[in-house]
Image (cartoon, rainbow, N blue to C red; front, side, top):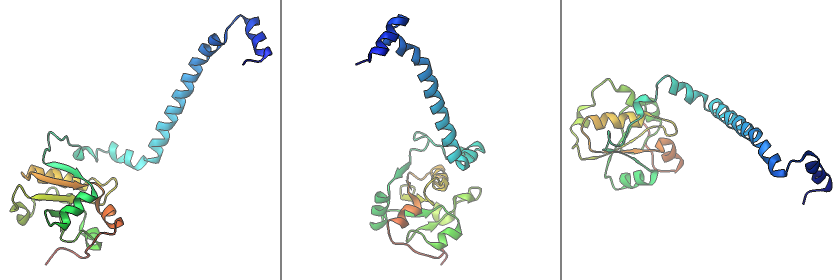
Length: 184
């Protein structure tokens, strides 16, 4: 309930509290816009390295539509683990040789995405096009697995699955790992 002094103030100015609320609307809108702008600036500052990479066009190659890449599907760690445990897919590690040698999914082949100018190895090209292929990279904001998945798709493979959490999530879950390179 309004106090006596505020009632008197409203009566003396001839304005109602509804009029007072309407006069505050532009101020509230300005404050909301300032808060929104600060949020955008803070978000850009916190993610500056990603913003720089995006501005350089680094992610352009990894954007793909499901219509253009119908054979590529994102999967969870659990789905990847199930495929691995049942030996139902060929796993490819899209990281470089160094990180691969430090640890990788057992039986995974090292096929770095950075070698996109090179042809895929002959033994990969000889795989049946319907074979399930599981691709992973570091995890987080890594784009290598998507780049490799696109290459495999472009070569006609029809069942490519990208483990979204990558090696980071596999290792954190305490799942089996191998060390060393895949050279025999």
